Length: 170
Image (cartoon, rainbow, N blue to C red; front, side, top):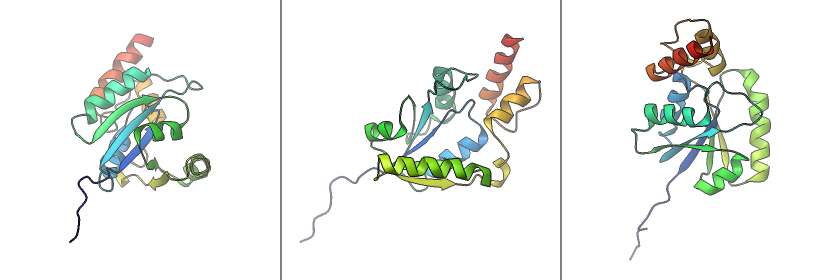
């Protein structure tokens, strides 16, 4: 007689970042992560060493409005060490996007440190889709700051938020 497990372990991945703002590149990686995990937690970093354009609460709200309709995507803010947050939510995979070779050195060092701190968490490096490779949040902010068209780079909700924010700063 063979027994079948009554519950299967849920494979949880973290996709952490500042997401200031979330771009089509981020959205692409989130959706593609769901091809090899059961759940993605978009972990919005509250990094005290950065001065973001949008507050953590605003970034969480925007990402939730854009991605939150999918039952297997959760958006949460965190501060402190990523490995502590991973333990808290039961994540075993850390997803990182690599747009260019220049991203690799920093990301590799972080992956090794995370492995040291939490050996059971694996880091998976993903390359963006060809049509989103050049998109970065900092470039989107810069284009929006000077009134450029960001409609092909971000969700319309983010585009509206950028226009409002920069209008308020003028």
